[in-house]
Image (cartoon, rainbow over all chains, first blue to last red; front, side):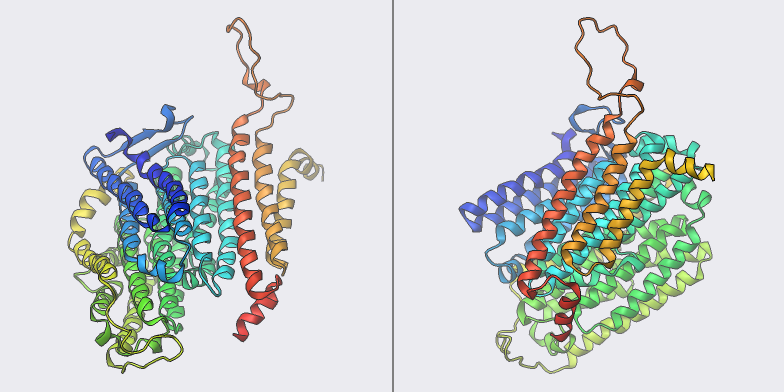
Length: 496
Length: 130
């Protein structure tokens, strides 16, 4: 059993996805508990796997017993052990927290929703664990296809937004596939470790440079890196609450992981930073992404759309950290994958909870919410402090690593962009807090919510939200342990 | 001039892929009709599938099926057989492209039910007037 943890993380949600869609034919109310079981088992095994990785350093798994350069191997080290645990645990919390939202927004579709939910997790965990470049493409498309469907389940403009996401996402996937094709022509292998050993002799080949660029563009589209971010705000903004709070924290972070994995394991640090000298332009582009995301966020009048642009800005943080090319920057980027996943989940859960009670997320409709929903708004203040970067919360620590990395590398533009975005975040969140604290509650007729109806959300939503908010502080306090035991060993191996 | 001809004729499979890819990209960007955009997307994906299929081929080679022989002493020369791996990979890629197309058509249907049109500019006009 213990040998099979890596594959169980991926296979169990897949099996349960079929069970759930079958159970929907019998009784709709069976779907949620079954999904909880499937998701819970997956999260349980990834925590166990992380424990296993922390003691042994590396877990290899061969699917079907085929030796790795020929068969598909799962290759789990500290990096993906950490990220897969974050992904499955957060997806599990989100599943519990958004049950009421699913009942409210997509009634009669629980079976479809929950099986897509599990399939999305199959895609993400597969991307994280696999050690095979083509397998990664297939699972990338599994995750993307399910996210198109999850977003398209929304009402109003959601299908159109999802369709635009589909066009962009498919192009991204195709570019990645093309890059893998170039790599395959040159090396004749698809296994990441095998490709990495074959590549150093080929660094001067222009085909490898093209492979790298195609992979970067493909991953860049999927993660919504600044000039390629156009699909994100609409797709996540119009998605149903439960889909948005699942996809927004996880999908983009997993794509940043793919980028780090491609640079660290496949193409090697030497190729990206010494041969291609891509560091400087990419850091500048990331700085631009941070500033642009912050400025667009200022212009939004809807809470959820504001969060979407904050996500665009945070992608810039991580990309910049990766391309700084020093220990502190890379540590900051990997730590920020973890922190930003928790922060984004908390932001979207707050939005979902408010939406559940008020039925709208326009900023001027948030008046007086502090009196009506004190616990939710307390969580909102915690996550706001974390996004701004106030010390005991986790957001401060990753920003600290990123800024010190920027100073070490002499990238003062990037440091300035980080500070600028922190200031803009202060304005963004204090504007929301001011409206909801000092504004008097207004009755919005025609939306079915009278002042009496707007009250604190049910406990099933509040408890997960509180857990995530406390998690922000706990992860912040344990930053030292995470960096020393999980992140530094990865970077040491790569010679940072 | 002759160098250019060699570059074009000798690598015609890559050129065809590039042409197909550009046709697909053009349709996705320039066409206003959602179905035409989808067809463009499909052409784009097909060009990459053909790219993979063409890199597995070898001149004068046959399909990679070994005949059953009584003695297993005969050495198999890989040069006599085409490389089946890219072709097998593309079976998966074809499945991905078909399912993408299916999801996209379902979304287009949903858009059509709401807006009663498939022209993107008309949909945008309706959205602006909302």
